[in-house]
Length: 132
Image (cartoon, rainbow, N blue to C red; front, side, top):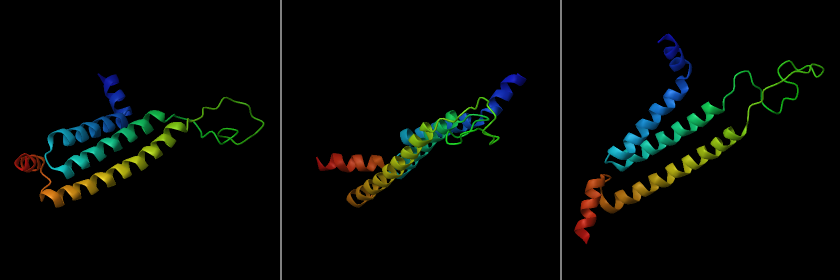
């Protein structure tokens, strides 16, 4: 039991990202308001970015641009663990895409509000059915 608790506590970043993913999915699926759905989508995207950054972390590792590891002595030969920069670069791209997606979704929500005078999904569907 103590080992299980220590595993849960030592991997808290994974639990936080899973909880954020569930909150985002809940908001996207259950909520009726379009703005709440957009916020849920943004929370889900942030949780996925946090998860990828968490799995790319490595203890006692250095960035690949440092040639001689932690001590800076070029004459010391020892094995050095390097951090893979690819997940970090991909997540920077994902952050840019997330911001762009949020901007487009908010612009569409504004257009929908001007068209239907509401952001509630049920009311929008009812107005669409009335127009047919």
